[in-house]
Image 1 (cartoon, rainbow, N blue to C red):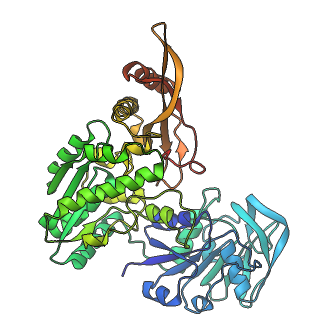
Image 2 (image 1 turned 60 degrees about the vertical axis):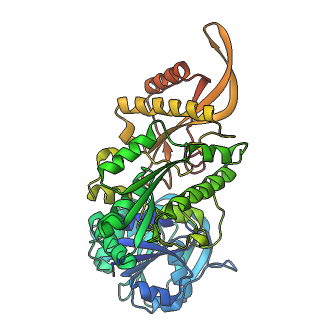
Length: 510
C-alpha cells in the first residue's frame, strides 16, 4: 500500500492546492470529504491527516464537524484555518468571533520551538483568511505562534503529533509555507517521499495486470496526453491485449486525424481508425446549446465505439483517461454541487456495453500525467501538445456547428498555433486556440464593405488547468496572427483577444 497523506475537505477554495503541495514533496495525497468514516480512514492507513480550511464557523448550526475517533487514532494531524478552529472546538477549547478579522497578509511570530517550524525564521509573512480566532486552547495544547490579531496563530499538542495553523501554508503568499508543510510531512509524520512519476507508472502497470488478468481492454485514443499515457500504461501491462480505437469525429484541428494515426503507429499501438465525420455533423445540425452539443457528441461517440467494440468479443474492460480535476469539477468531493460543465471522461457507460472500467490516471493532475508520460518515453512533441477538449471544435463554435464554420475555425486556429510556435512561446502557454463567435461585424477590404465573423483568440498559462491566467503574448505576435487570419481565412474580418482568468471564467468558452 502506498504512503498516503489524507486531506479532509471542509470546503476551502484551497483544498486541491493542499493536495498538490503535498504531492510536490513526492508524497501521495488524496482528498476525501470531511464526513469520511473512520473505517475508510483505517483502510487507507494514512501517514498523516490534514484538515482543510473552509467558509464555515464552528458556531454555525450546521457547520461540518470532526469524528473524535480520528483524533484518537494516533495519526499525525494538521488543522489549517477552520481545521485548526475545529480541533480546538471539538477538544473543549474556546473559539470566538473576532472583532477584527484577518483577510490577506499578516505577520506571525514563532514563540515556541517545534519541528513544524524547523529552520523557519522567527517572524514570517503569512496569508490569513478567517473571522474567528482561538482564545483558549484545549488541555494539553500550547501556542507556538501568534499574530497581532490572533494570540494563537499556531498550536501543538503535548505529544507533538497534532498541530494547528491559523494561516494558509499552501498558498504562495505565505513565506516558507512549503517548508512548513514539508516539516509536518517529514519530521512529524515521518513520510519517506518516494512517490514519483516513475513509481506511479510502475504501480499503475502492476495494478492493471492484477485487475485485468488475461482479459482484453478497449481504449479510446484522441492524440491527447491523457489517452496516450493511459494507452501506454495498459500496453506495458498487457501488451497485445490492448485494442485502441480512434474516432475521427470531424471536430478535430487541421490535419489532426492523420497526425494522430501516424503517431500511434510509430508507438506500436494496435489501433482501429474510424471516419465518422458525417454522422457527428448530422447529429449536431441545428443544435446551439453547449451542454446539448456535449451530450450529443458523447452519445454518438459511444455508438461508434460500440460498433467497433462489437467486433472485439474478447474485450471485458474499457480504459479511460479520466483525471482528478475531471472528477472534482464534475461531482464535488463533498457531494452534490454546482456543476460547471459535464466532462466527456466522467460518467457511466451504457449497461449494454457490459464492460468494466479502468482509469489508471484518475488520481493524477494534468502536469503529473505529463511527468508520467515523460518517464514512459513519450516524445516532446506529444508531451507538449496543448490540451484539447473531448467535444473538439464543436464547443469552440458558439452556436450551431456547420462544415464551413469548422473549415474557417481550423484555418484560424492553425495560424494562431503556427505563429506562437514561430515565436518560440508555444511551450510557455498551457493552451492556445480560437473561438468562432456568432457575431458579424462591419469591415473594409479592398475599398469594399464586409460583414463577416469575429474570431476570439484564447491563450492561458496554468499548471494543471484548475486555475489559469491569460497569457501575456507580445502585441507584435498578436498583430501577425490577426493580420494573417483576416487575410487568409475567408469569412472572418475581426480578431479579438480574451483576457479573462479562471476563475471567474473557464478556459473554454463553452
